[in-house]
Image 1 (cartoon, helix red, strand yellow):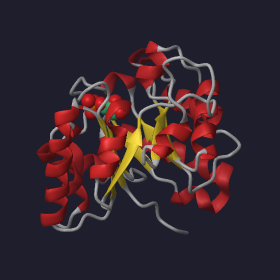
Image 2 (tube, rainbow, N blue to C red; image 1 turned 90 degrees about the vertical axis):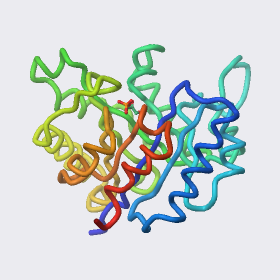
Image 3 (cartoon, rainbow, N blue to C red; image 1 turned 180 degrees about the vertical axis):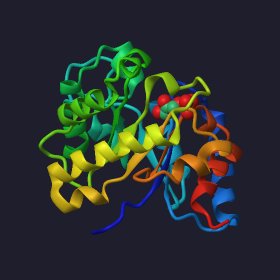
Image 4 (cartoon, rainbow, N blue to C red; image 1 turned 30 degrees about the vertical axis):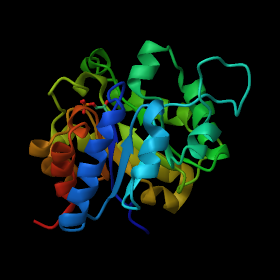
Length: 252
Ligand code: 13P
């Protein structure tokens, strides 16, 4: 059974202007001068910076988008297609982030259509799932994330064109994280659902944890069984912090 290649991914959300490319250059330098990390590194800036980041990024850094429309082109004012994202040089698209599910009422069915669009354009879809605090308090965490997973993966999914990100909504931007036992429980449930769906190949799909990951807790969280990397918000905006999280995948 092949092991997942871990990934540390930065989701810049609605942050960053042209000048922020300096953080990308700083990160490149840090990756060059630090010990090699046994993970892929991905930076997902806003759409406005996708092309410049892709031009600037060296081979060690993948560039991704944070959303896409499900159609390839057409009369959808203000939207961006997966084909445009691929054309800008990106390789990944985050779909179904809880902020999009909440701010834009995106359903898992729509998320699956967006993931299918990413696949149509030859890109990897990073499919996000996660429970709200109320759902956790009601003991529904595992059933919620498994139903989000089942409904958010399109038929075009394979073990090599998806990454899963588990992000408890209440842990995003709050400084709070689940216990390592709680993370292990959810990741184990996701892993067995992936094996049910993709057979053995399901063991090679990376399952990222996201929600208040920072350099000080990354080692502990990344050491949890079935955690194959991180999806990082706030701490991805500064190269030094992001590199400090990548340290979890460097030999001590
Ligand atoms: P924070 O790392 O800021 O909590 O955000 C997590 C997140 O939503 C990444 O997609």
